[in-house]
Length: 357
Ligand SMILES: Nc1ncnc2c1ncn2[C@@H]1O[C@H](COP(=O)(O)OP(=O)(O)O)[C@@H](O)[C@H]1O
Ligand SMILES: [Mg+2]
Picture (tube, rainbow, N blue to C red):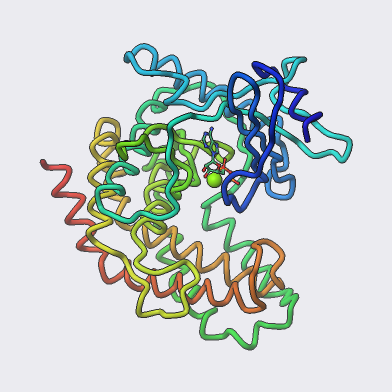
């Protein structure tokens, strides 16, 4: 591991390397040298097919953000991720096993949260995500589409139909009720996505993994910096909003067996939406604002589908902690979806009110 760390242009000699964080996707380590701390990651080759293209995306976006932060009088080293290149100036190192390693600067004095515990924290998170989108709203350099079809429900239905036809794990007959949850909403979800396909909703630079542990807060709880930029893509900005609400505002856990505990916490929703809109109102079109409330249903529905599909496939994508874990997750996300359906008008009203003030 030390030999890998030494491939990168670090200040000072490597002293220690230790595991960091609880990410589901990459393996993350903290590297301490005489002069500074860094974050070393082994990127997940199963999820990302083209890691060099991903790193070029991250480099392009972070350099652009740093320039904006500098012009606004901020601190580009703390408010934006810094990619550290190797000695031969590539953005990744490939080891003998073919694994890809990357390095970035550890942001000192930052705090990560694993859950939104107060509406005020949700507001700060929303502001961080809104600001990220706002600062990138005029980024017009190319971005590689490193996750083709991500959040595109038409493509998901193609995978879903194949999965049902294959019935690889022989579980289809045991989940007919759950399959009906998907089928009964197929048309409304396609109609929503059609707004994007027909160009009514633009593609923007979005983060695409807006759970709360992908944002660093400062010690006062303010949003400092978006991290985990692996999934930066051009996609509708409601993806970031819907996915953030799915994680920030769920009263229960993603895999809660107590379905009564699961639901949209409207105070948390309001906090997040207030922070997000305080930044995003500067660029959102009326069609984009109009899509935000439904996006909570759209993204949560997609997650029900993905968990159920992985259960049908025999658990090949998500890590599981028990044999029926994906089914438990699908049921919990379905309970959240039903709550989002019941609260959709209230969410829409809250967004309208926040935009008028
Ligand atoms: N530059 C950084 N500065 C400080 N902490 C970081 C930094 N990058 C990552 N972390 C910490 O490591 C955790 C995992 O990193 P992340 O890039 O989100 O990996 P994953 O893709 O596996 O989720 C984060 O939640 C955060 O706590
Ligand atoms: Mg992460």
